[in-house]
Image (cartoon, rainbow, N blue to C red; front, side, top):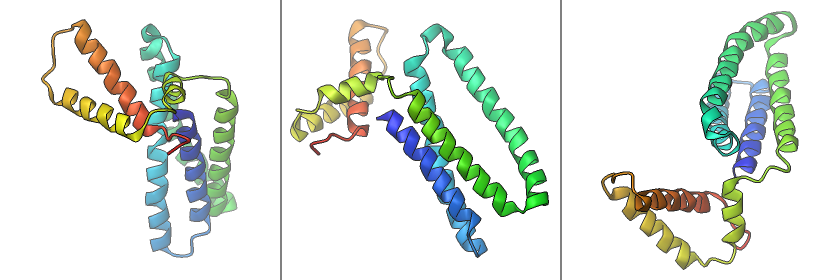
Length: 178
C-alpha cells in the first residue's frame, strides 16, 4: 500500500545517499544521484495521496499549503546548512548525515502511521480472493471508462470515477497470493 511505498521511497533515498557519500568517481556519483532522485520522486506523490485520505476535504488546501511551505523551507535551509557543515567537516559527512535523516524520517513515519488504515488498504484486504481474470476485467472496464468523454455530474459518473480509483489502487497494491 501507500504506507509501504512511502517507507520504501524514504529508505531507498537514504541508501542512494549513503552510496553517494562513498562514490569514488563523478560518473558513479551522477548515476547514484539520478537513482536517488527517482526514489525521492516517489515520496511526494505518495505523501499527497496519504494526505488526501487522512485530511478532511475542507482542510486539504491548508494541509497541502503547509506541506509545500515545509518543502520550500527545506529547499532553502538544506543547502545553506549543508554548505556550512560541509565546509567545516567535509561534504561526505553531509551526505551521510542526510541519509541518516531520511532513515530517521522513514522509521518515524512508519511508527506514526502504524494504526492508520487508509481507504486503499481496505480495498486491498477485501480483494485477496479475486482471481487474476477478475482483475483484468476490472482494468479493462476502467480503461474503457477513461476513454469516454467527461459526463455531466451524475451519480453514474461518480460511481465510475470511484470504481476507476479503486481499480488503480488494486493494481498498485501487491496481493499476498500473486
